[in-house]
Length: 75
Image 1 (cartoon, rainbow, N blue to C red):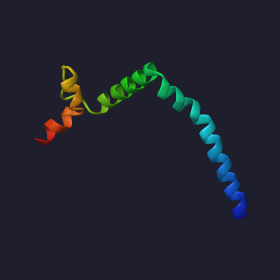
Image 2: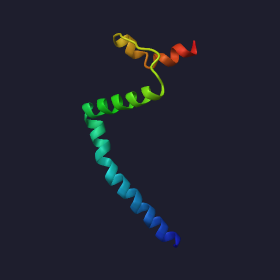
Image 3: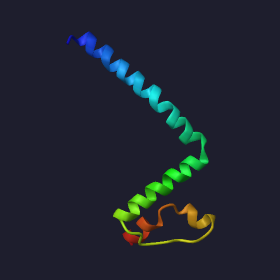
Image 4: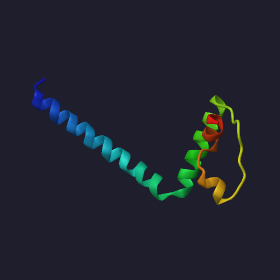
């Protein structure tokens, strides 16, 4: 194939990918429920690989610390 055909083919593949992924990205951005289910699923999968070592219960001050597990492991 010539260089021109490769460039046109790669542009067509990129446009197709963006056209197919845009609705999924928009739903992820707009829907709080979809994000919640997604992150719950990911945390469930990762807990099977890496067991949970810490569980924190608290208010906005606790949530503001973000990942407390990393902070506790470093000290």
